[in-house]
Image (tube, rainbow, N blue to C red; front, side, top):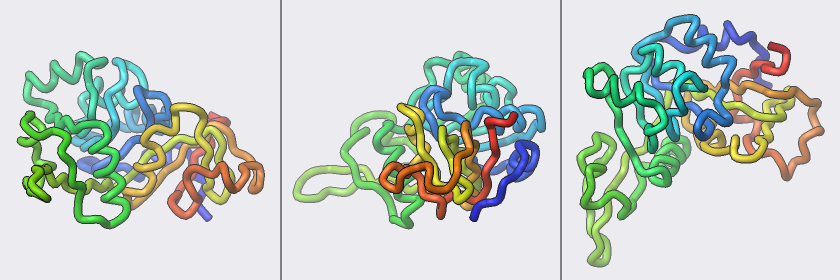
Length: 221
């Protein structure tokens, strides 16, 4: 069973220099209360793995706005001008990876796989990414071998979460939450609503409790 902790205790689990994977899409599905606690704590030099950087002042963008991130591994950053500013200043390193490739690289990290083979990104700047291991040819077709990615901590957020850690996500907030829940040494789940065991039908469980280490009851904050 995962342990129920306060938002401050959750923030204490994230230390300077850690790699943090954050679920959600454009801030929808981010663990907002935990992120706010990390901003307040002032943890720094983070590597963030996420689909994107949301607009300034929302979700995980607050960590970037506050200069707490040294590296961002993502697919889209255009909504946050602070990303471009910090890139140009040399204070933020950005590794852009195609969205589908990144999702599969996270999944590979969680599943213990050696990488992802894909033609996506061939002939583009993606080839120069540190996350590209090599190029190979299979049956006459060229592919990139993308490295798996893992994190020290994953932050996910579910609309319904039971005490066993089973999670149901509402709408597009599911985006990236399910994959990042598999790829980290420690998984912290922020719950919009805590429900009883059995209130989430087994077939509707989207992240199984075995992946979740800690729960923060966001509905009481």
